[in-house]
Length: 166
Image (cartoon, rainbow, N blue to C red; front, side, top):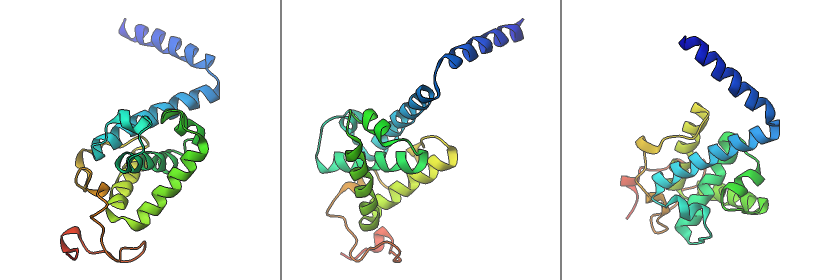
């Protein structure tokens, strides 16, 4: 009896799925991934999700938004238009600039790089947005512009945060 109910439900779901075009399926999948990723970044950084998709342009919000764009492109290869729509209707060129800025921040800011790489590794390993519960960096630590490590460049060996020169 129970198996029959499951088979009927499966047939109904397959029928609904057949009504969607491949582009619509891709859009729904991308939107869900970005929505989950926005939640993950909001939890990891302390920036509310409403600010990430809103019009705020302060440094903390912008950096967190750069992180969302960067991980969405690198881990999930979501189109620029889809990312822009999910982040409050932003233009695709804004998303391009955001991804580039995140790349620059990865080279300049070790805290941003640690958080970005952690999110990226988890997202690609699981094939879905990651859970920031066991992140290695402190909440919003990478957002502080005064906490820079002198001489940190991409490819150069870095000291640990406790060994940074004061």
